[in-house]
Image (cartoon, rainbow, N blue to C red; front, side, top):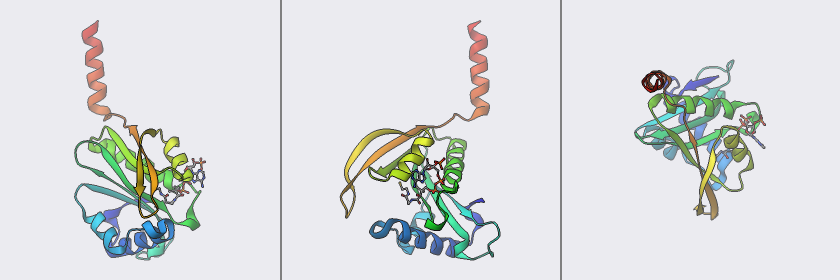
Length: 174
Ligand SMILES: CC(C)(COP(=O)(O)OP(=O)(O)OC[C@H]1O[C@@H](n2cnc3c(N)ncnc32)[C@H](O)[C@@H]1OP(=O)(O)O)[C@@H](O)C(=O)NCCC(=O)NCCS
């Protein structure tokens, strides 16, 4: 079940996300302090996946997390992760779908991201959602010195204004 970060107790969310960061990213993981700073930073939108039957307030109820930064130009996917015990169940797809919808609703025209060139699961996920490779950042991930692809996807225009605009243009041409 996807939920907005604001509906979750902040300390519980910080503990749960930092624990998944350590499990998923090893030496590159964000600490609890870094997670809290990121969640509190301006213009962020974060969502989590919560196990529906888990007791409220339990950090283990949070199975996945993802967020973007949108400052008025493009939306930048900051991170996405799903606890190892819960992977391959469609959770990342649900998180990313929600973020793409939300970025589009906020007015972003593209979503951008960086991904390790050797991260096959993430690359497959992003391709499935239409992200295309833009460029390469050499030795982007430290301390390992692994390269990153930069990727982007165009977001659907906000439907209301766009549909009306299209209609007017069609009418004018006739
Ligand atoms: C990448 C990650 C978020 C995917 O999470 P997930 O919940 O297991 O993914 P989903 O079950 O929603 O899968 C969605 C799609 O992603 C791709 N995918 C996910 N895991 C994959 C794997 N191990 N191998 C190949 N493709 C994979 C597939 O295209 C999949 O669609 P499909 O199931 O129809 O084949 C997860 O593996 C993870 O947390 N990895 C560590 C953190 C990370 O690398 N984050 C990205 C940083 S850029």
